[in-house]
Image: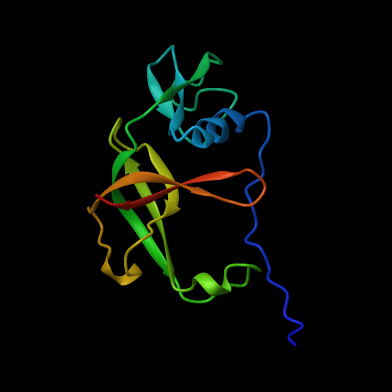
Length: 141
């Protein structure tokens, strides 16, 4: 008999500022904060537009979920409990198609982590997690 306990991967913290992002993911939709004053997307969410620096008119808009790998790293060892069974895994900086320099960090899944290159086209998919969290992830398009 084993005394081993399965350690769950940690879930992201959800607060009032980020809740619309997580709620849209739960619906299978990728939504990004949008400034109605300067008409620019913004990620990570903030209370004041980081582009025009003058607007708090920030809402949320659904995006296509398409993008390209801008940068990435392959994780070969983890010091975070719950991630050890996942190594190696790839964490990528995804540039979303809607706007230059609109970046989102996520895993690229369903592929050998060493088989991904900068510039690869990706598309979002959603992973159910413990605690009713749905996590946007990406796969090669």
